[in-house]
Length: 162
Length: 156
Image 1 (cartoon, helix red, strand yellow):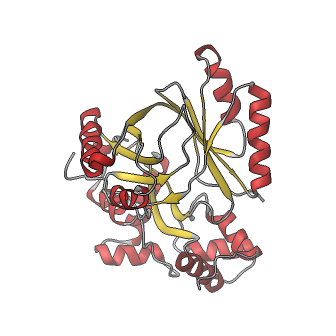
Image 2 (tube, rainbow over the protein chains, first blue to last red):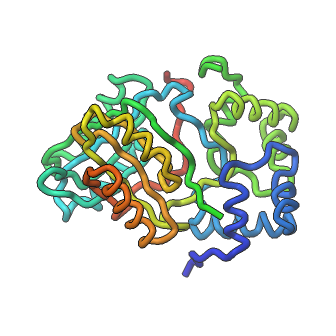
Image 3 (cartoon, rainbow over the protein chains, first blue to last red):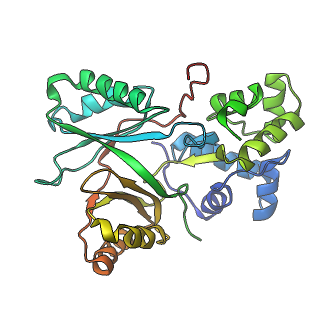
């Protein structure tokens, strides 16, 4: 069984790295010094959190918007509850889908239970992507909408407080 | 800095290093030796990307729900109140994403808290402050493991 708990030092490492690693030749040493830990301890704990899934990945976090991916569509689909897991797995594997989740419906005003975020450089690319998802869902698709974002009002990485 | 101004090295750093950043004493030097460039070139390229806000950071991406709890919230805000309500929501420390979207539910944001109790308290407070109902849509299942995103530099 993979250990999913984090202790005080893990939490301090998360707080020290969540806004990014320093761009210095030995970034883990820099973090270690700030925290009064050894660099081996910092790297070891990051490795453990990576293995247990607390950290999904370590790397560059591109700003898709600045890179020209200005079209961000939240596509929402109403599919049968019995099929949502199978269908979600398929949609989640499409390379233009950045997030794919099952969420509860709120009837009657919100019948959609499958969410997929798509990103592209142009509106017509987004429409092509929606078409691909629709084809994958086939007759299980009982209705869908795409909610384009008209404004990013706030966007920060996941933060945990002190 | 526009996307077309990126150097070949920067494109590689952006596209190929969204995961597996080395957990070693000298990660930038390790990347440099793999790419056949110098450590200074890698650091300079990354600093430039950072300053131009082409990357928001280099570092760990944490999996939501592992260090707290969160939910996606939608609100149907009357047009004339949208600016005020949106500013209020963005100002909350528990909110890390806030988008205006084209729909009757026109404000969509993510609320994150360390406990479920705190999360519910934030939602209750938002309803009290704004007088507008919130629709909370917590993630029930995730079907995508975020291992980065193909930026398709060769296929624009």
